[in-house]
Image 1 (cartoon, rainbow, N blue to C red):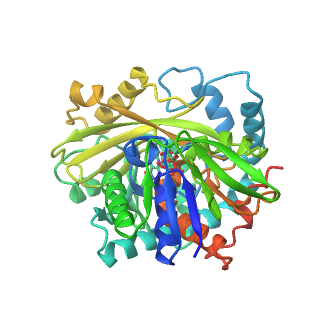
Image 2 (cartoon, rainbow, N blue to C red):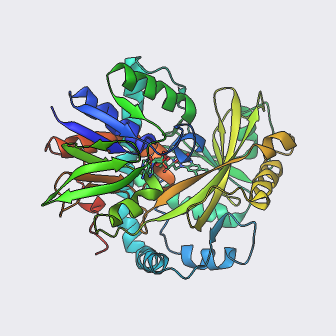
Image 3 (tube, protein in one colour):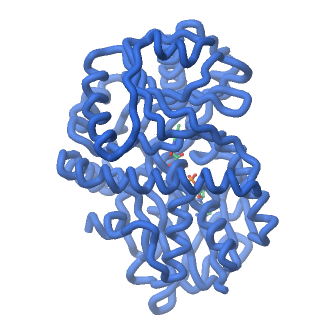
Length: 414
Ligand SMILES: Cc1cc2nc3c(=O)[nH]c(=O)nc-3n(C[C@H](O)[C@H](O)[C@H](O)COP(=O)(O)OP(=O)(O)OC[C@H]3O[C@@H](n4cnc5c(N)ncnc54)[C@H](O)[C@@H]3O)c2cc1C
């Protein structure tokens, strides 16, 4: 049995704790927050085998430049004179090509499908009480352009064995008769499921506490002290820990922690927003509103509208014009939806940890043999939590991982 300290109590940290404690390790999770906020709580909850295309794809650079001219656009890179950002954009640019997309699609699909299976398994085991439904995902479009764009993805998805149907607005209405959508059509991916993030997070934490895992909130890791080829102590304001193994699953903050031990990881943060609408909206099917890039999820007791990818420095500021843009998009696709000003005032934000090529980073730091890093999951971190947790456990136990982790190497941009 080893003592493992996990820095970060988001979805990646909790799932890692789950699999480490399951095989008998002693686990401590340190988190700087109150353990109730951030990307892992406010995300759209969609388990995404359908999302086979990485963010770095052909056309994203020109789309990004075009969107930068509009303050309410769904994708935005805030210009800043920062060497880290310049390096990240360079790696993003190098990855935004067909060859990279072709190579990445089967990797992303495999990770997502495995992780979806792990969620189903956690649900079936019954020791975690959380909401999980498999109703697929609608990619709903209004324009020919979006339809053509998604048609190309659908062909690739079908080649990978995913079941996708093309639906007319009437067919969508037949499946979701309590609300009309103003769309030209939709593709329905049958493989996706959805969950209510805060419900899962709190069920998981209760389970972990019951298994003897220690979860310490308001506990920011300030220093990592090294000795030879390992990090031998972790310092917070009030405690010093001497673990055998360390997992850095600190989301967008991972880069600054790694800098403390002299390792640079290209990682930026992509802020997104969520608006919750309580009660019944008539929306039964999760959807992506394609032109607006807004995700809509019927959760346990409320509907969540999530969107925006704002690449900026780490901050939790709510930009009201972006929240309004999500609300406008919701009304344009669901003309009868009513989003109150209270819901808008209570909009929340979270930061996605973005690698430049859209693949996560999972692996050991070479220079310090007891440090494992798991981050960079971008738009798929919720989906990939369980598979990442399992892989981290397998790395620590020196087992062969469930997938080949070479493409996820921390050193692939060096
Ligand atoms: C609007 C929105 C919608 C999304 N929708 C989806 C979706 O539908 N499906 C999907 O798969 N993904 C989705 N995502 C992405 C997903 O939410 C993220 O990829 C995922 O939550 C990242 O999890 P994480 O554990 O890596 O990071 P986080 O959740 O950010 O957790 C990292 C934790 O580390 C802690 N920490 C950081 N530094 C320190 C330190 N020095 N000391 C101690 N603690 C520290 C932080 O407090 C934080 O709690 C969405 C994201 C957003 C913003």
